[in-house]
Length: 401
Image (cartoon, rainbow, N blue to C red; front, top):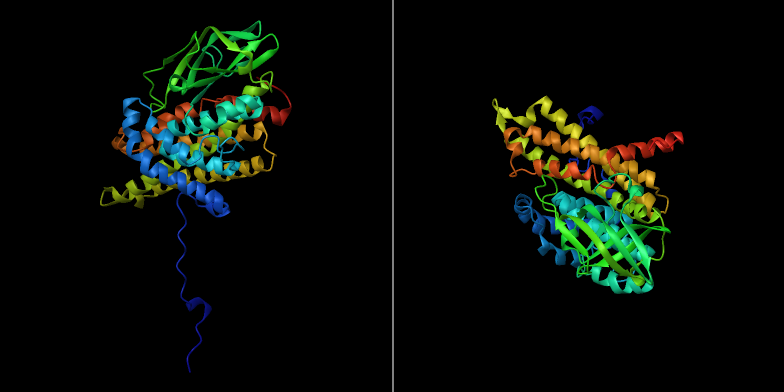
């Protein structure tokens, strides 16, 4: 008679391998549509962005050839309804940002500015005529926008705006300057925010308008594949039908920044994932003192730390996206996620660069490029300190700005 197999002698099933870039299975929490969006953008990044982005980063150029590819996937104004926009949910937009920044922050920034900072205010605060005139062409990538808010002296204090607009009959005359403007020199239109006697107003200024000029900011060591510009307004005459009628005050530009910051919380995850993925391969292949680097406890601990930071960021952004889709997201929610995720991502990229040793300073490997880009991402659209103080205000009820 056969002896029954005891519980302790039963053959063990092989443990299922976890995805090293998604340890908590965030992918399993996505809808079928969200997965399809992520996969489509991932293919674009793998096939079109990664083969060319290093050269553009090194040469300080933006790959304008990608614009039709991005438009064809419906990535411009992807979360807006109507006017040729895709009408995707917030989580899908986040996944778009994550995959694009896995390629490079410059590509994600380009889409973010077009979608969240230019199309969003026209869609939300524009007249019907403005929406019909601009949004369909922006969705198709035929018109590129830039967002004129930051000024040379202003930084984190947009209320200290010096650019001003005064009425002249039915027109407005704008004077001032903006600085560190993504897409500025290649943009067909600018959403310019200016002080008026009524408060801050938004103006749509088209390329070629007399008195409106741009300069290209060169010699950057971050976001080198992105177009960064200064904007100058010298008695620029703007007709009244180019004023956004639906908002007056800081609420306008700040609401746009909330949309863009939301995308950033996802985007930086992609940069961190790219670094961890390359580092896992490198440490398995590199043999030192007779064994792979990955066989060392110190290396595994550092890899685990990277995974912890990426995983917590993924869960934070996913919950943020669900809050946004349910209409419950607040600017403070976004501040916490941008602060946490940017800090986590830059630490992952810096450590990855270090663990590559001498190779870490070479553009042959991705960490140095992502690390340098994140020095800008952690600063723009609200510095880390601004977001920390936003949460401090939520906790204490006291404004320390």
